[in-house]
Image 1 (tube, helix red, strand yellow):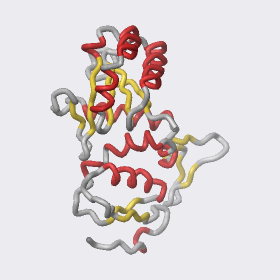
Image 2 (image 1 turned 180 degrees about the vertical axis):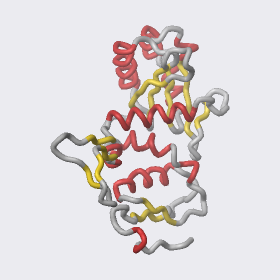
Image 3 (image 1 turned 45 degrees about the horizontal axis):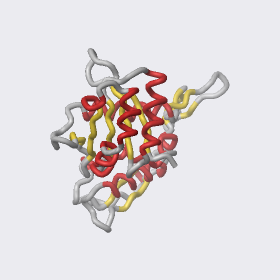
Image 4 (image 1 turned 30 degrees about the vertical axis):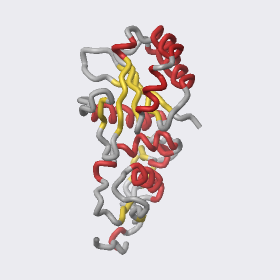
Length: 221
């Protein structure tokens, strides 16, 4: 299983797109180099190269001490000393610049770009053809359908998606209700990334949005 994936992201309208590589754990430098090389060959040199992940200080030290990594990536990303940046994801979902510890100014835009990339690439939106259509629970018809389960085929990408949930996982939560069981994996990953629950994680229950929600026995906390 791959332990990093990449997408393009524009901080400001007047600058080139930057390349973002999301990692989980400590991937090998060869995997990172392959991603950068493939992207630059298709999209040209980025404005910045961001490497983002959870607790990535070890990875940063490893890469910056790897002369071959700096040389090769520097041949694809000009002025690498200035353009290579590391971003750390905290347990509450904040994105911080690793060097300064300051909040990254374009965190929301970065997360939206990554989610959008996953949604399109994993075909989260299913469109019908002329021969069939979709029926809503209400009985109405439509030609498009969002299939959430398509977005969770990669554990690494699901970890990235879970970052957006962390800020809402307060310590007083005992249960999490989802409208379909396919979302449970996403919530489970988010709960494990959060440091608010220790070994006793909240339970996850699906109330089934295609059933009569009024008949579901929600437990008041």
